[in-house]
Length: 268
Length: 68
Image (cartoon, each protein chain N blue to C red):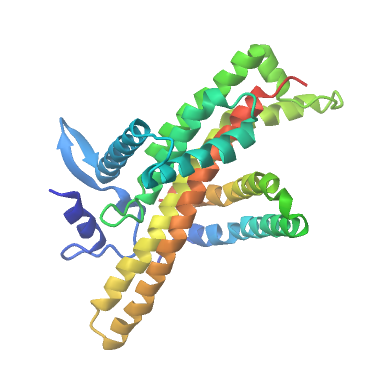
């Protein structure tokens, strides 16, 4: 079965049951089973996006020329953004190079997986399933702790969490707070922010699109007309979602870079 | 009418971060208006502050799942 047909089906209420109002359970979209494991729509969308990204980037870097084609120009625009605005500005021009592949890969991967939420026929941001952000955050979590411990040693890493010059009795309190920030709050907020934004954004779109459809198929003629403003609102919210999706990809990468920068900070 | 009161709680809890995000961007716009060349320096700081303030609202969203 094609993804196209399924994506349209996902928006239209099935026979007898309505998807309105949308519930978190509506995000469970199994497509087919492979050896007892369900393959869901977010997984298929993620695979499509990843394949497209890989092909695009490999082709563009193979064809790289001194006088860039239009495609190369746009590729370089995105690369420059990730390199200069995120990696170099946050980590500093001295240390940012080893982390550039990670930052750029994270940025394009999240950006295009998010944009799948407004690309016609895909229309589901992969990151609206909590598993995907958790996977990404696990990578970031390991990386920034590893970088910090490699750079400062285990003792030095824990020591650098407390800023110098504090009175003695505050140090244990601050240390506990910082420990919580480093090991619990940071990964938790990083994963939840991306998931929450994509989930809520998709929910809003479903409310206006499916809600409009529910109004349109109702019996009253007055309600049929109300469907038009609902769909107009869906159009506006789609544009707004595009902005949010870009912003969240940017924020995720920016925070990753800032955590790495924090771990690289020279001892005080 | 049936539903969960935790949704109302989420709406209330979103007020704080909303004001915070407003204040952060107001300060950012002010800063850029006074000194346009500082834009590049202020932007990551503003986005970082926005992300941290927004985290509180995102925590509230978790309530939505806890109740069910």
